[in-house]
Image 1 (cartoon, rainbow, N blue to C red):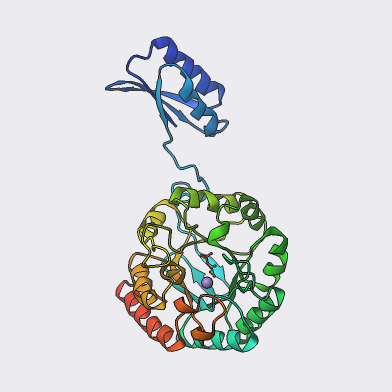
Image 2 (cartoon, rainbow, N blue to C red; image 1 turned 90 degrees about the vertical axis):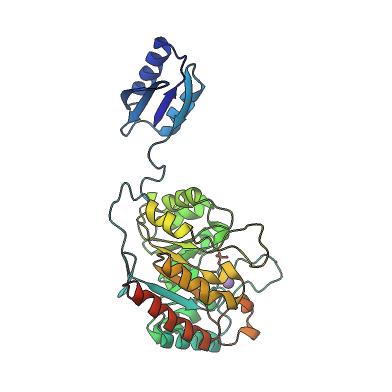
Length: 338
Ligand code: PEP
Ligand code: MN
C-alpha cells in the first residue's frame, strides 16, 4: 500500500502514520516526492483494510493499493500459467479446449445425440444443465439428478468428461458425484458461501463471470474458491449487461487479454449466452480465440427448435461441425492446438 501525504502534512503527522503502519506489522518505507512525502507499507502485515482506514488521519491525501487484492489468483504471485488436467485433456498454458452440448439435459435421446455430434465434430468436454437457473419460476428447471445421470452416461459412452452447473451448496456432493467439472453460473458469481464450499472439494470449477461483475470483482470471486484450497478454477467470460439490446448480452472480448495479464487461471469464452442468437456464435467464437482465450463453451442442440431452454442460441450439429473446422484454422494460424 502507498500512503500519499498531502503537501501541507507536518512532520508529526508523518511520524504518526509511520508509527501506525509499523504497529500493523508492515515494513515502512519513507519516499520523498515532488508534492510531499509518501509512505510505502510492505510485507504480510495485519490486513490491508486496516491500513485503508488510516486515510481518515490528518495529513493523509490518499491511500492506493500497489498490489492486487486477489493474491492467489494473481499472476504477480503465481508466475506460471495454470495448466489443468481433466482425464487426458489439458486446459490452459496455450492449449485450446472446446466444451459443447445442450443448455439443458432434456431426455436420453437428446443428450446422447448431443454427445455423439459434439464428439464427432471434435469437442472434448460435454456440457449440459441438470439444475437450471431460470428467470421465470414457470420455465423448465432441469431434470435434477435424473439429468445428471443421463449426462454422465452420455459422457462416458462417448469418452467425454462432463461439465454441469451446481446451483446451491446442498447439491454440491450430488453434482460432484456425476460431474468432472462443476459450473458456477453467472447468477451465483458472488454467492460467497457457495464459492467457499466449492473451494473445499477436489474437482475443477468453471466459474462464469456475472453479467454485472467487474473484472476485479470477478477475480475476487475466483479468490474465494482458491483461498479454500481448490486451485482448479477455470474462468469464463459469458457477456455482460450493457445498454445494447441487439444481443442478449455484450461479449466483453477485452476481458480476455485483461484477465490473461492479471491472472494465471485459464480463461474460456461462452459466446452462446453472450449473443443469445446462434448466428453470432461462430464469429464471436473465432474472435475469442484470436483474442487469446484458452477455449470455448458452446451450446449445441440436435433439434434447437424443440429445445426446452436456449434453443435460439444453440447451434445445429452441421453448424457446429463447420465452426469446429474454422476454429482449427484460426488456432493453427496462431500456432495453437485444439
Ligand atoms: C448455462 O451455461 O447454461 C448458463 C445458465 O450460463 P450463465 O450462468 O452464464 O447464464
Ligand atoms: Mn443456456
